[in-house]
Length: 458
Ligand SMILES: Cc1cc2nc3c(=O)[nH]c(=O)nc-3n(C[C@H](O)[C@H](O)[C@H](O)COP(=O)(O)OP(=O)(O)OC[C@H]3O[C@@H](n4cnc5c(N)ncnc54)[C@H](O)[C@@H]3O)c2cc1C
Image (cartoon, rainbow, N blue to C red; front, top):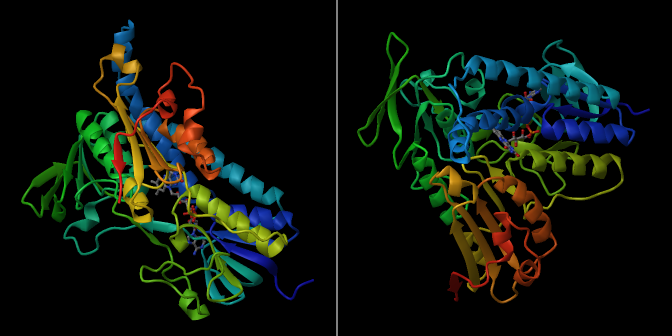
C-alpha cells in the first residue's frame, strides 16, 4: 500500500481527465477525480456536443427550402428555441450521467468539488476543505472563454458558455471573433433565423487554416446572409433600458443587437490553482509547460488537454490522457503525435481538413503541386441553391506525397476522418489516382483530379 491516499488524483472531469482516470484505474491504480462543474467537461456540457446539436437544428431552414426543388411542398414552419434548448439539455444530462457511471464502474472515486494543488503530492478539495495526497497529480482543467476586460460595456456580452442557455433567441446578434467557434455560432444563429453579423479584428476569418478555404468559407457565409466584417473591433458597448445592445466599432460603425457574443479565444484555466506554489511552470499565456510525456516541471505533476495549449481539441485531450495513463501506470510508454490532426469546422457549409495548409507546406518545400476543384454539389442542381463545394490537395512535387487535403462542403468533417488515415499512412497522389471513384458522390473528385491547377517551384 502506498503512503498516499491515491496513486493518481485528477483535477478536471473533462475529455482528458476522464480518459486518464479510467485508463489508470484499469491498470490497477487507485484514482480520485475532482470536477467543479459537470462531468464530461467542455466538450460534452458546453462545447462540441451541444454545438453540433445546434448546427443540426439550424440546418433545417435550408433543408425545407431545398426540398421544394425536389417536388416537396413544405407547409408552415415555426421554430421553438425553448424546445431546442430543453431537448439539448436532456441529452447533455444523459451524457453526463454516462460519464459519471463509467468513472464509478472503473472504481474511480468522484469528488464534486473544485480542487487546488497544495504541493507536489497534495490537493485541497474546496467543497469540504479536505486535503488528499496522491503519488501523481494530473491537471486536466481545460480552458475558459476570453472576454475583453478593458472594453467599456464588456459586461453585457455573452460567450459560448451562455449562448447554450439564452432564454430567448434575439432578432439580431453580433458574434465577435474569427476562429472556428465564432464561425460555427454565426452559422447556427443565421440558420435559426437571427440576423447575424460576424465581426473580426483580423484580415480574414479562420486564421491557421488554408487561405483558399478561409476565403471560400467567408464567401459562402455571406451568400447565406451573414454579414462578415473583418478588420474591425468593438470599442464600447452600451445597453439601453429595453436590454438592446449598441456597439461602437473602431472603424466608426454602430451595431445594434439583442445579444453580442464574444468568441475571441480561450485561456488555460490555471488561475488560483496553486500551481505556482507547487513549482509548476506556466508559459506566457498561463498554459502549463509539459514535455512530450505531458510531465510538468514538477516530476509528480502531469497535465493534459487544453490547459497545456498544444492542440485544443477533444480527441487530442483524450489521446494525451490515455498516453499519460498507459505510460505512468500501464508500463506501456507512448507519446501523442501532434503533427497530423484531422479536424472539422462545423461552418455552413462544413470544412474538413487534414495535414498542411498550402502556406505551411511552402515552408517545408518550395515544390508543390496544388489540385483544386470547385463545383456545385449535385443536390444543388435541383435545389437551385448557390453553394459551391471546394476540394484542395497539396502534393509534394518531389516525393508525390500528399501533404494536405482540405474540403469545404457537406460532410467534409466525415471525409477528413477517413482522409486522416490515408495521410497517416503516407499516401501519395499516385495512391489517390489508382483508387476507384465512388459514383455519384462529391468525394469522387478527390481521386479524379488529374492535372495540378498550380505547379509551385522554388
Ligand atoms: C463552443 C465549443 C465548441 C467546441 N467544439 C469542438 C469540436 O467540435 N471538436 C473538438 O474536438 N473540440 C471542440 N471544442 C474544444 C473541446 O471542447 C476541448 O478541446 C476539450 O473539451 C478539452 O478537454 P480538456 O479535458 O482539456 O478540458 P475540459 O473538457 O474543458 O475539462 C476541464 C474540466 O475541468 C473542470 N475544472 C476546471 N478547473 C477545476 C478545478 N480547479 N477543480 C475541479 N474541476 C475543475 C471544468 O469544470 C471542466 O469540466 C469546443 C470547445 C468549445 C468551447
